[in-house]
Image 1: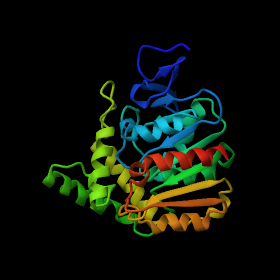
Image 2: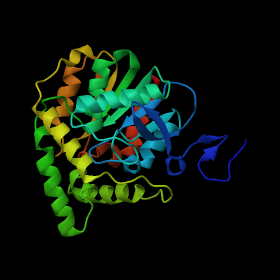
Image 3: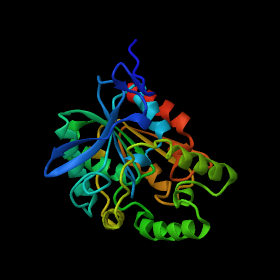
Image 4: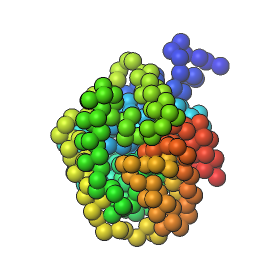
Length: 290
């Protein structure tokens, strides 16, 4: 077996997100920054990320866990992190950009893992480009017009202030419960996000963050769409106490999607899939293999 000296690369296949090089692909006037790891064969899993997130905001345990069996692609949407262009202020335009990125890599069939805002984008892709999507994993997210989604801006501002006042990362409040388990899980998650020390991504700009907040707010005010048109298998996951996108939205998604399965993690918030990363990866792999 050929093993590269750098940890996390085997037979020229990147096996660790910590060492995945950041590449770019140009399409639609945008240079999309992305990372790729896992086997080169099979249907790839495209990760769509949350509000304010860049490449370095994915939990490496989740990425590496899925990449153990599947090709994984993470990327910065237009105007975010190291990707060029200006960030759109609608979920629909973000979905169009995501499809542009996917097609730029020559892919005609993908699995999508969408977390939070990424799950909203994933729903639009599945409705607009059904032939492109094999399966969906929707975590910590909700449907258009979902209950409480319009409050994301207010909550984000509030918890950013809480973070500043307590010298903590706002994600400790936004993603995790305030129970002993939740606090500990938050600290461990934030530590994992710092494992990559080389070639880290650029933080999101305030302008792009504002555009994303506007897009989520609009999504929360939209008329509900007909989710029965999404015929693909869907795994819906969340923590039982999601403050950002209230957990009842996950139950609503699972009820309205024709072929869905719902997983709710106990004593967990918006970041339930990160708190229970081991169980989530096991479930996701089983779902993707089905």
